[in-house]
Image (cartoon, rainbow, N blue to C red; front, side, top):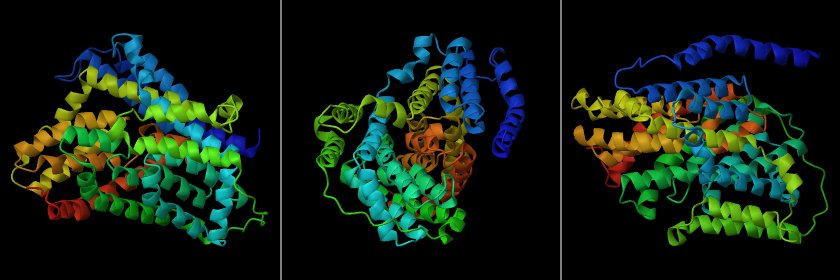
Length: 470
Protein backbone atom coordinates (compact mmCIF):
# COMPACT_ATOMS: atom_id res chain seq x y z
CA UNK A 1 0.00 0.00 0.00
CA UNK A 2 1.39 3.42 -0.99
CA UNK A 3 1.71 6.26 1.58
CA UNK A 4 -1.21 8.07 -0.08
CA UNK A 5 -3.46 5.01 0.08
CA UNK A 6 -2.44 4.40 3.71
CA UNK A 7 -3.34 8.00 4.62
CA UNK A 8 -6.73 7.69 2.92
CA UNK A 9 -7.43 4.41 4.71
CA UNK A 10 -6.43 5.93 8.07
CA UNK A 11 -8.71 8.91 7.45
CA UNK A 12 -11.62 6.60 6.61
CA UNK A 13 -11.07 4.63 9.83
CA UNK A 14 -11.08 7.84 11.88
CA UNK A 15 -14.35 8.98 10.29
CA UNK A 16 -15.92 5.58 10.90
CA UNK A 17 -14.91 5.58 14.58
CA UNK A 18 -16.19 9.15 15.03
CA UNK A 19 -19.60 8.33 13.56
CA UNK A 20 -20.19 4.74 14.71
CA UNK A 21 -21.63 5.73 18.10
CA UNK A 22 -24.18 8.32 16.86
CA UNK A 23 -25.13 6.07 13.94
CA UNK A 24 -25.62 3.08 16.23
CA UNK A 25 -27.67 5.19 18.65
CA UNK A 26 -29.87 6.53 15.89
CA UNK A 27 -30.24 3.05 14.41
CA UNK A 28 -31.37 1.64 17.75
CA UNK A 29 -33.83 4.52 18.21
CA UNK A 30 -35.56 3.58 14.95
CA UNK A 31 -37.53 0.86 16.69
CA UNK A 32 -38.22 2.53 20.05
CA UNK A 33 -41.75 3.62 21.01
CA UNK A 34 -42.68 7.33 20.75
CA UNK A 35 -40.23 9.44 22.77
CA UNK A 36 -41.23 12.99 21.80
CA UNK A 37 -44.57 14.51 22.75
CA UNK A 38 -46.79 15.30 19.80
CA UNK A 39 -44.62 13.41 17.29
CA UNK A 40 -46.15 10.22 15.80
CA UNK A 41 -44.07 7.03 15.60
CA UNK A 42 -43.77 7.37 11.81
CA UNK A 43 -42.60 10.96 12.21
CA UNK A 44 -39.99 9.96 14.80
CA UNK A 45 -38.63 7.29 12.48
CA UNK A 46 -38.64 9.57 9.42
CA UNK A 47 -36.65 12.14 11.43
CA UNK A 48 -34.14 9.49 12.60
CA UNK A 49 -33.65 8.11 9.07
CA UNK A 50 -33.03 11.66 7.83
CA UNK A 51 -30.43 12.26 10.55
CA UNK A 52 -28.70 8.95 9.76
CA UNK A 53 -28.57 9.87 6.07
CA UNK A 54 -27.17 13.35 6.79
CA UNK A 55 -24.43 11.79 8.94
CA UNK A 56 -23.56 9.34 6.17
CA UNK A 57 -23.46 12.08 3.54
CA UNK A 58 -21.36 14.51 5.59
CA UNK A 59 -19.13 11.81 7.11
CA UNK A 60 -18.42 10.25 3.68
CA UNK A 61 -18.39 6.74 5.14
CA UNK A 62 -20.46 5.43 2.22
CA UNK A 63 -20.56 6.68 -1.35
CA UNK A 64 -23.37 9.28 -1.68
CA UNK A 65 -25.45 7.10 -3.98
CA UNK A 66 -25.16 4.11 -1.65
CA UNK A 67 -26.21 6.23 1.34
CA UNK A 68 -29.15 7.53 -0.70
CA UNK A 69 -30.44 4.05 -1.52
CA UNK A 70 -29.91 2.94 2.08
CA UNK A 71 -32.03 5.88 3.27
CA UNK A 72 -34.92 4.83 1.02
CA UNK A 73 -34.63 1.26 2.30
CA UNK A 74 -34.66 2.46 5.92
CA UNK A 75 -37.76 4.59 5.30
CA UNK A 76 -39.63 1.49 4.16
CA UNK A 77 -38.19 -0.95 6.73
CA UNK A 78 -38.76 1.31 9.74
CA UNK A 79 -42.34 2.18 8.90
CA UNK A 80 -41.58 5.86 8.37
CA UNK A 81 -43.50 5.51 5.11
CA UNK A 82 -46.39 3.18 4.50
CA UNK A 83 -44.81 1.10 1.72
CA UNK A 84 -41.66 0.96 -0.39
CA UNK A 85 -43.63 2.69 -3.15
CA UNK A 86 -44.18 5.62 -0.77
CA UNK A 87 -40.47 5.64 0.09
CA UNK A 88 -39.64 5.88 -3.62
CA UNK A 89 -41.67 9.09 -4.12
CA UNK A 90 -38.57 11.05 -5.09
CA UNK A 91 -37.83 8.75 -8.02
CA UNK A 92 -41.16 9.71 -9.63
CA UNK A 93 -40.36 13.42 -9.23
CA UNK A 94 -39.28 15.39 -12.35
CA UNK A 95 -36.27 17.00 -10.62
CA UNK A 96 -33.82 14.03 -10.86
CA UNK A 97 -34.63 13.73 -14.57
CA UNK A 98 -34.10 17.48 -15.00
CA UNK A 99 -30.66 17.03 -13.42
CA UNK A 100 -29.68 14.21 -15.78
CA UNK A 101 -30.71 16.35 -18.77
CA UNK A 102 -28.60 19.24 -17.48
CA UNK A 103 -25.56 17.01 -16.85
CA UNK A 104 -25.89 15.70 -20.38
CA UNK A 105 -25.60 19.28 -21.66
CA UNK A 106 -22.29 19.59 -19.81
CA UNK A 107 -20.96 16.40 -21.39
CA UNK A 108 -22.05 17.67 -24.82
CA UNK A 109 -20.12 20.91 -24.30
CA UNK A 110 -16.97 18.80 -23.78
CA UNK A 111 -17.54 16.34 -26.64
CA UNK A 112 -18.37 19.07 -29.14
CA UNK A 113 -15.10 20.94 -28.43
CA UNK A 114 -16.80 23.98 -26.92
CA UNK A 115 -15.28 23.38 -23.46
CA UNK A 116 -11.71 23.50 -24.75
CA UNK A 117 -12.44 26.56 -26.90
CA UNK A 118 -13.93 28.47 -23.97
CA UNK A 119 -11.23 27.28 -21.55
CA UNK A 120 -8.47 28.60 -23.81
CA UNK A 121 -10.31 31.93 -24.10
CA UNK A 122 -10.58 32.18 -20.29
CA UNK A 123 -6.87 31.46 -19.80
CA UNK A 124 -5.81 33.85 -22.54
CA UNK A 125 -7.85 36.67 -21.01
CA UNK A 126 -6.54 35.85 -17.52
CA UNK A 127 -2.93 36.45 -18.73
CA UNK A 128 -1.43 34.14 -16.15
CA UNK A 129 -3.50 35.39 -13.17
CA UNK A 130 -5.40 32.89 -11.01
CA UNK A 131 -7.38 35.77 -9.52
CA UNK A 132 -8.48 36.91 -12.99
CA UNK A 133 -9.85 33.42 -13.70
CA UNK A 134 -11.85 33.54 -10.46
CA UNK A 135 -13.14 37.10 -11.03
CA UNK A 136 -14.24 36.28 -14.58
CA UNK A 137 -16.33 33.46 -13.19
CA UNK A 138 -17.98 35.34 -10.31
CA UNK A 139 -18.72 38.45 -12.37
CA UNK A 140 -20.29 36.33 -15.11
CA UNK A 141 -22.99 34.85 -12.85
CA UNK A 142 -25.53 37.74 -12.98
CA UNK A 143 -25.15 38.02 -16.77
CA UNK A 144 -25.31 34.28 -17.48
CA UNK A 145 -28.48 33.99 -15.39
CA UNK A 146 -30.45 35.76 -18.12
CA UNK A 147 -29.19 33.24 -20.74
CA UNK A 148 -29.24 30.10 -18.57
CA UNK A 149 -31.62 30.79 -15.66
CA UNK A 150 -31.08 27.42 -13.99
CA UNK A 151 -28.07 27.35 -11.65
CA UNK A 152 -27.84 23.59 -12.11
CA UNK A 153 -27.58 24.05 -15.87
CA UNK A 154 -24.81 26.63 -15.49
CA UNK A 155 -22.92 24.43 -13.04
CA UNK A 156 -23.34 21.35 -15.22
CA UNK A 157 -21.81 23.20 -18.18
CA UNK A 158 -19.25 25.43 -16.44
CA UNK A 159 -17.71 22.64 -14.38
CA UNK A 160 -16.52 20.95 -17.57
CA UNK A 161 -15.16 24.22 -18.91
CA UNK A 162 -13.23 24.96 -15.71
CA UNK A 163 -11.98 21.39 -15.48
CA UNK A 164 -10.51 22.06 -18.92
CA UNK A 165 -9.06 25.33 -17.61
CA UNK A 166 -7.37 23.47 -14.74
CA UNK A 167 -5.98 20.86 -17.11
CA UNK A 168 -4.59 23.44 -19.54
CA UNK A 169 -3.27 25.51 -16.63
CA UNK A 170 -1.73 22.40 -15.01
CA UNK A 171 -3.65 23.02 -11.76
CA UNK A 172 -3.83 19.84 -9.65
CA UNK A 173 -7.20 18.53 -8.47
CA UNK A 174 -8.02 20.02 -5.06
CA UNK A 175 -5.68 23.02 -5.35
CA UNK A 176 -6.82 26.16 -3.51
CA UNK A 177 -7.75 28.04 -6.68
CA UNK A 178 -9.73 24.98 -7.86
CA UNK A 179 -11.56 24.82 -4.52
CA UNK A 180 -12.44 28.52 -4.75
CA UNK A 181 -13.82 28.15 -8.28
CA UNK A 182 -15.79 25.01 -7.43
CA UNK A 183 -17.29 26.45 -4.23
CA UNK A 184 -18.29 29.55 -6.17
CA UNK A 185 -20.00 27.30 -8.72
CA UNK A 186 -21.75 25.21 -6.07
CA UNK A 187 -22.87 27.97 -3.70
CA UNK A 188 -22.59 31.51 -5.04
CA UNK A 189 -23.74 30.55 -8.52
CA UNK A 190 -27.20 29.58 -7.21
CA UNK A 191 -27.72 33.02 -5.69
CA UNK A 192 -27.76 34.76 -9.05
CA UNK A 193 -30.67 32.56 -10.13
CA UNK A 194 -32.94 33.34 -7.18
CA UNK A 195 -32.94 37.03 -8.11
CA UNK A 196 -35.10 36.03 -11.11
CA UNK A 197 -38.61 34.63 -10.72
CA UNK A 198 -37.80 32.14 -13.51
CA UNK A 199 -34.47 31.20 -11.92
CA UNK A 200 -35.36 27.82 -10.48
CA UNK A 201 -37.29 25.95 -7.82
CA UNK A 202 -36.57 28.39 -4.97
CA UNK A 203 -38.05 31.57 -6.50
CA UNK A 204 -40.92 29.80 -8.28
CA UNK A 205 -42.03 27.90 -5.20
CA UNK A 206 -41.51 30.84 -2.82
CA UNK A 207 -43.47 33.23 -5.04
CA UNK A 208 -46.29 30.68 -5.31
CA UNK A 209 -46.50 30.28 -1.52
CA UNK A 210 -46.27 34.02 -0.81
CA UNK A 211 -48.67 34.93 -3.65
CA UNK A 212 -49.14 38.08 -5.71
CA UNK A 213 -45.60 38.20 -7.14
CA UNK A 214 -44.89 39.38 -10.69
CA UNK A 215 -41.57 38.88 -12.51
CA UNK A 216 -40.64 42.56 -12.20
CA UNK A 217 -41.91 42.79 -8.62
CA UNK A 218 -39.79 39.80 -7.59
CA UNK A 219 -36.69 41.21 -9.31
CA UNK A 220 -37.19 44.60 -7.64
CA UNK A 221 -37.33 42.95 -4.21
CA UNK A 222 -34.60 40.36 -4.62
CA UNK A 223 -31.92 41.71 -6.99
CA UNK A 224 -30.16 44.00 -4.50
CA UNK A 225 -30.17 41.58 -1.51
CA UNK A 226 -29.09 38.61 -3.61
CA UNK A 227 -26.39 40.47 -5.49
CA UNK A 228 -25.13 41.63 -2.08
CA UNK A 229 -24.92 38.00 -0.88
CA UNK A 230 -23.22 37.07 -4.15
CA UNK A 231 -20.63 39.83 -3.65
CA UNK A 232 -20.04 38.97 0.02
CA UNK A 233 -19.82 35.27 -0.83
CA UNK A 234 -17.29 36.01 -3.55
CA UNK A 235 -15.14 37.98 -1.12
CA UNK A 236 -15.47 35.20 1.49
CA UNK A 237 -14.35 32.54 -1.00
CA UNK A 238 -11.35 34.66 -1.96
CA UNK A 239 -10.44 35.20 1.71
CA UNK A 240 -10.64 31.49 2.54
CA UNK A 241 -8.49 30.40 -0.41
CA UNK A 242 -6.39 33.49 -1.07
CA UNK A 243 -3.14 31.50 -1.05
CA UNK A 244 -4.20 29.83 -4.28
CA UNK A 245 -4.47 33.19 -6.04
CA UNK A 246 -0.79 34.02 -5.50
CA UNK A 247 0.28 31.32 -7.95
CA UNK A 248 0.48 32.23 -11.60
CA UNK A 249 -1.01 30.17 -14.40
CA UNK A 250 0.82 29.13 -17.54
CA UNK A 251 -0.68 30.51 -20.71
CA UNK A 252 -1.62 27.61 -22.98
CA UNK A 253 0.35 27.15 -26.15
CA UNK A 254 -1.32 29.12 -28.91
CA UNK A 255 -3.52 26.91 -31.03
CA UNK A 256 -4.54 27.66 -34.58
CA UNK A 257 -7.91 29.35 -34.45
CA UNK A 258 -10.43 27.13 -36.12
CA UNK A 259 -13.92 28.19 -37.12
CA UNK A 260 -16.80 26.99 -34.98
CA UNK A 261 -17.81 23.60 -36.32
CA UNK A 262 -21.28 22.47 -37.24
CA UNK A 263 -21.32 20.18 -34.20
CA UNK A 264 -20.54 23.11 -31.92
CA UNK A 265 -23.24 25.27 -33.51
CA UNK A 266 -25.83 22.50 -33.13
CA UNK A 267 -24.84 21.97 -29.47
CA UNK A 268 -25.18 25.71 -28.80
CA UNK A 269 -28.57 25.78 -30.54
CA UNK A 270 -29.91 22.83 -28.51
CA UNK A 271 -28.79 24.33 -25.18
CA UNK A 272 -30.12 27.81 -26.00
CA UNK A 273 -33.43 26.31 -27.19
CA UNK A 274 -33.86 24.60 -23.82
CA UNK A 275 -32.96 27.87 -22.11
CA UNK A 276 -35.56 29.73 -24.17
CA UNK A 277 -38.22 27.27 -23.02
CA UNK A 278 -37.17 27.78 -19.39
CA UNK A 279 -37.31 31.57 -19.74
CA UNK A 280 -40.79 31.46 -21.31
CA UNK A 281 -42.36 28.98 -18.88
CA UNK A 282 -44.89 31.65 -17.90
CA UNK A 283 -46.37 31.29 -21.41
CA UNK A 284 -46.36 27.53 -22.03
CA UNK A 285 -46.27 26.26 -18.37
CA UNK A 286 -44.06 23.27 -19.20
CA UNK A 287 -42.32 21.57 -16.29
CA UNK A 288 -38.57 22.52 -16.38
CA UNK A 289 -37.70 18.83 -16.71
CA UNK A 290 -39.38 18.64 -20.15
CA UNK A 291 -36.98 21.04 -21.96
CA UNK A 292 -34.09 19.25 -20.23
CA UNK A 293 -35.30 15.85 -21.45
CA UNK A 294 -35.93 17.19 -24.98
CA UNK A 295 -32.37 18.55 -25.01
CA UNK A 296 -31.16 15.17 -23.71
CA UNK A 297 -32.84 13.40 -26.65
CA UNK A 298 -31.58 15.95 -29.19
CA UNK A 299 -27.97 15.74 -27.96
CA UNK A 300 -28.08 11.94 -28.38
CA UNK A 301 -29.74 11.97 -31.81
CA UNK A 302 -27.29 10.81 -34.53
CA UNK A 303 -26.42 13.58 -36.93
CA UNK A 304 -27.81 16.25 -34.61
CA UNK A 305 -26.09 16.01 -31.24
CA UNK A 306 -22.45 15.21 -30.45
CA UNK A 307 -23.12 12.33 -28.01
CA UNK A 308 -23.57 8.58 -27.98
CA UNK A 309 -24.77 6.61 -24.96
CA UNK A 310 -21.27 5.51 -23.94
CA UNK A 311 -20.38 9.20 -23.42
CA UNK A 312 -23.03 9.34 -20.70
CA UNK A 313 -21.76 6.17 -19.04
CA UNK A 314 -18.40 7.89 -18.56
CA UNK A 315 -19.35 11.53 -18.22
CA UNK A 316 -22.54 11.69 -16.10
CA UNK A 317 -22.28 11.15 -12.34
CA UNK A 318 -25.23 8.78 -12.03
CA UNK A 319 -25.11 8.85 -8.23
CA UNK A 320 -26.46 12.42 -8.56
CA UNK A 321 -29.77 10.95 -9.70
CA UNK A 322 -30.08 8.69 -6.66
CA UNK A 323 -29.03 11.35 -4.14
CA UNK A 324 -31.47 13.98 -5.41
CA UNK A 325 -34.32 11.45 -5.64
CA UNK A 326 -33.60 10.16 -2.12
CA UNK A 327 -33.48 13.69 -0.70
CA UNK A 328 -36.94 14.35 -2.16
CA UNK A 329 -38.19 11.07 -0.67
CA UNK A 330 -36.83 12.09 2.75
CA UNK A 331 -38.53 15.49 2.52
CA UNK A 332 -41.81 13.84 1.52
CA UNK A 333 -41.53 11.37 4.41
CA UNK A 334 -40.88 14.19 6.90
CA UNK A 335 -44.03 16.00 5.75
CA UNK A 336 -46.37 13.03 5.37
CA UNK A 337 -45.35 11.44 8.70
CA UNK A 338 -45.94 14.64 10.66
CA UNK A 339 -42.24 15.18 11.51
CA UNK A 340 -41.87 18.35 9.44
CA UNK A 341 -44.89 20.21 10.92
CA UNK A 342 -43.76 19.11 14.40
CA UNK A 343 -40.28 20.50 13.73
CA UNK A 344 -41.76 23.72 12.37
CA UNK A 345 -43.87 24.28 15.47
CA UNK A 346 -40.90 23.45 17.68
CA UNK A 347 -38.44 25.75 15.92
CA UNK A 348 -40.48 28.82 15.03
CA UNK A 349 -44.01 28.36 16.30
CA UNK A 350 -43.38 30.19 19.57
CA UNK A 351 -41.66 33.24 18.11
CA UNK A 352 -44.59 35.68 18.59
CA UNK A 353 -44.12 35.30 22.35
CA UNK A 354 -40.94 37.36 22.14
CA UNK A 355 -42.79 40.62 22.47
CA UNK A 356 -42.70 43.79 20.42
CA UNK A 357 -39.08 43.57 19.22
CA UNK A 358 -39.36 43.13 15.46
CA UNK A 359 -35.61 42.58 15.14
CA UNK A 360 -35.69 39.82 17.78
CA UNK A 361 -38.42 38.01 15.84
CA UNK A 362 -36.36 38.28 12.63
CA UNK A 363 -33.23 36.93 14.34
CA UNK A 364 -35.13 34.02 15.82
CA UNK A 365 -36.76 33.30 12.45
CA UNK A 366 -33.28 33.11 10.95
CA UNK A 367 -32.06 30.79 13.72
CA UNK A 368 -35.07 28.49 13.36
CA UNK A 369 -34.74 28.44 9.57
CA UNK A 370 -31.03 27.58 9.85
CA UNK A 371 -31.70 24.58 12.08
CA UNK A 372 -34.53 23.45 9.83
CA UNK A 373 -32.33 23.77 6.72
CA UNK A 374 -29.73 21.48 8.29
CA UNK A 375 -32.34 18.79 8.91
CA UNK A 376 -34.39 19.03 5.69
CA UNK A 377 -32.12 18.11 2.77
CA UNK A 378 -34.44 19.19 -0.03
CA UNK A 379 -35.03 22.91 -0.66
CA UNK A 380 -38.61 22.27 -1.82
CA UNK A 381 -39.42 20.50 1.45
CA UNK A 382 -37.80 23.30 3.43
CA UNK A 383 -39.76 26.02 1.63
CA UNK A 384 -43.08 24.16 1.78
CA UNK A 385 -42.70 23.81 5.53
CA UNK A 386 -40.96 27.01 6.61
CA UNK A 387 -42.62 29.75 4.54
CA UNK A 388 -46.25 29.25 5.68
CA UNK A 389 -45.08 29.10 9.31
CA UNK A 390 -42.99 32.25 8.87
CA UNK A 391 -45.96 34.13 7.39
CA UNK A 392 -48.18 33.00 10.29
CA UNK A 393 -45.54 34.16 12.77
CA UNK A 394 -45.38 37.52 11.02
CA UNK A 395 -49.13 38.04 11.21
CA UNK A 396 -49.31 37.09 14.88
CA UNK A 397 -46.35 39.33 15.76
CA UNK A 398 -47.76 42.30 13.82
CA UNK A 399 -45.04 42.13 11.17
CA UNK A 400 -45.18 42.04 7.39
CA UNK A 401 -45.75 38.35 6.51
CA UNK A 402 -44.12 38.78 3.09
CA UNK A 403 -40.92 40.06 4.67
CA UNK A 404 -40.92 37.24 7.25
CA UNK A 405 -41.27 34.67 4.46
CA UNK A 406 -38.46 36.27 2.42
CA UNK A 407 -36.17 36.32 5.47
CA UNK A 408 -36.66 32.58 5.96
CA UNK A 409 -36.26 31.88 2.26
CA UNK A 410 -32.98 33.79 2.06
CA UNK A 411 -31.67 32.10 5.21
CA UNK A 412 -32.24 28.65 3.74
CA UNK A 413 -31.28 29.49 0.17
CA UNK A 414 -27.93 31.12 0.98
CA UNK A 415 -26.38 27.94 2.37
CA UNK A 416 -25.42 24.40 1.42
CA UNK A 417 -24.23 22.28 4.33
CA UNK A 418 -23.80 18.99 2.48
CA UNK A 419 -23.87 18.06 -1.23
CA UNK A 420 -27.34 16.48 -1.25
CA UNK A 421 -28.92 19.83 -0.34
CA UNK A 422 -28.33 21.23 -3.82
CA UNK A 423 -28.10 19.62 -7.24
CA UNK A 424 -25.42 22.17 -8.18
CA UNK A 425 -23.36 21.30 -5.11
CA UNK A 426 -23.80 17.60 -5.79
CA UNK A 427 -22.48 17.99 -9.34
CA UNK A 428 -19.43 19.84 -8.00
CA UNK A 429 -18.80 17.34 -5.20
CA UNK A 430 -18.76 14.46 -7.67
CA UNK A 431 -15.73 15.99 -9.41
CA UNK A 432 -13.56 15.52 -6.32
CA UNK A 433 -12.17 19.05 -5.92
CA UNK A 434 -14.02 19.75 -2.65
CA UNK A 435 -14.78 17.37 0.23
CA UNK A 436 -18.05 17.21 2.17
CA UNK A 437 -16.23 18.65 5.21
CA UNK A 438 -15.07 21.66 3.20
CA UNK A 439 -18.62 22.21 1.93
CA UNK A 440 -19.87 22.13 5.53
CA UNK A 441 -17.27 24.66 6.66
CA UNK A 442 -18.11 26.95 3.74
CA UNK A 443 -21.82 26.55 4.50
CA UNK A 444 -21.28 27.72 8.08
CA UNK A 445 -19.45 30.80 6.83
CA UNK A 446 -22.22 31.47 4.30
CA UNK A 447 -24.76 31.27 7.13
CA UNK A 448 -23.12 34.35 8.65
CA UNK A 449 -22.96 36.03 5.24
CA UNK A 450 -26.68 35.41 4.72
CA UNK A 451 -27.59 36.81 8.13
CA UNK A 452 -25.49 39.95 7.55
CA UNK A 453 -27.03 40.48 4.11
CA UNK A 454 -30.57 40.11 5.48
CA UNK A 455 -30.06 42.51 8.38
CA UNK A 456 -27.83 45.09 6.71
CA UNK A 457 -29.10 45.05 3.11
CA UNK A 458 -32.39 43.21 2.62
CA UNK A 459 -34.51 44.74 5.40
CA UNK A 460 -33.56 48.39 4.58
CA UNK A 461 -33.97 47.72 0.84
CA UNK A 462 -37.39 46.13 1.21
CA UNK A 463 -38.55 49.08 3.32
CA UNK A 464 -37.30 51.41 0.58
CA UNK A 465 -39.26 49.62 -2.18
CA UNK A 466 -42.51 49.41 -0.24
CA UNK A 467 -42.27 46.22 1.88
CA UNK A 468 -41.28 47.40 5.38
CA UNK A 469 -40.91 44.91 8.23
CA UNK A 470 -43.79 46.51 10.17
